[in-house]
Length: 171
Image (cartoon, rainbow, N blue to C red; front, side):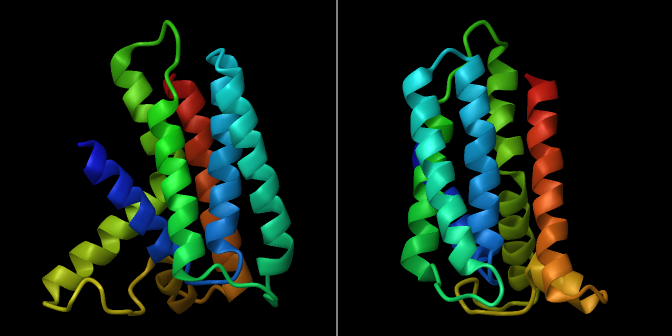
């Protein structure tokens, strides 16, 4: 289960890195929520590490937002996904129900998880290779619905904020 989680979240952030500022913004939102969750769970070291990752993502966002002067690439997006997957495994709320503590990281990282499931299902259904690039990501679908690229990125980041807020309610 651990290997599936780490590999899945690592690749989920690689899948989501399809537009300027999207993966870094989602990483900043997730690390910010994990920082607050770790602080309330009395895990100060994890909260500081999440704060460090939030600062890194905020700094990268300045250079990665449109028009991007800096690109994460596969290595950067996968590193971000790997670090967030490990943070999610280290997070352990004291006194919370075990089922809700498993649900919290899934909600905080819900948008990259959703995008990965959507893309993999879509490509398998159409008998296309999963590893091949395509325009079937959530971002591309929002753009095809008529949103411009900046609004599509902001919409996805707003959904991530809502899911992170739901994680607090679930806890």
